Image 1: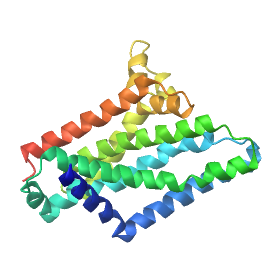
Image 2: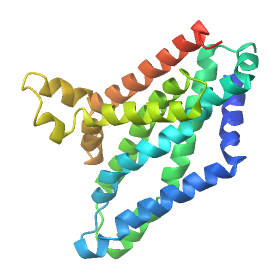
Image 3: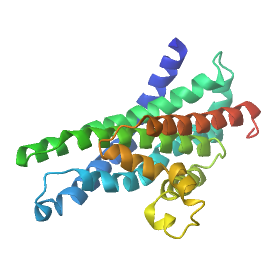
Image 4: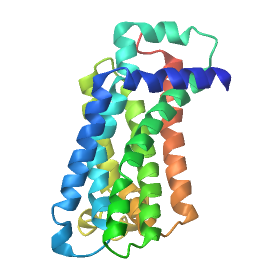
Length: 238
């Protein structure tokens, strides 16, 4: 655990040692606040549900940008070979990278807490869906990051890693969306709804914390972290 903690701190500080992290955070906050407050006073309702409805779409572009360098850059620069010769397991390295990126997203979400604080001062805010929305956003971010980390392990090119993560995350999110299920065969619709990241996020964002949604996200994250470790164990990128 000590080794994992050291690797975790190294990866996390790597974000803040570059101005790119601050650009990401600024863009995330500015875009999110603008999209929320632009129609807020026209709606006249003290609710953050509109914010959590477009947050997954912002994540689609933010999370691939965060994960694209985690393996691809190390492979291209040759530091991955040195890292994998250290007396640490592939799981420790993968978990350190995953939790560092998840911590970065947690910080980004934490900075948005001024939104519910402002809305609560303007009206009678129901905190149940707010807390559920943040919990769902964290699980969704974890799923996106695990998927993006796996895609980064498949290539040495950061742009390719970004595009792969963006495309697969989009498919994983919309496969259970209503506008997709309308045209889906009735036999496949329940399966597609269960597999979709979006349907589980919508459930948690409503303030309904169901164990099946939590288990789904944890399973999704574990599967792609496991696949990541399998790729690293093969060393097929050398």
